[in-house]
Image 1 (cartoon, one colour):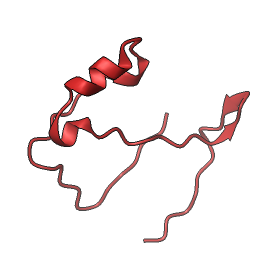
Image 2 (spheres, rainbow, N blue to C red; image 1 turned 90 degrees about the vertical axis):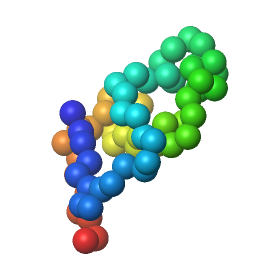
Image 3 (cartoon, rainbow, N blue to C red; image 1 turned 90 degrees about the horizontal axis):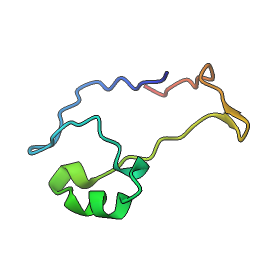
Length: 64
């Protein structure tokens, strides 16, 4: 499990949070076409580890 903590985060106006992952749907192109506004953006997730498995315990210091 991984998560990101953001200071001062304010979602854009019109943002609709959802647990749906349209990229897992066989009709991903259709699902993406139905999104609009700020909800249309899908932020890529960068995984740590190699191709055999992910390394969830890998952490990187942040420059804050």
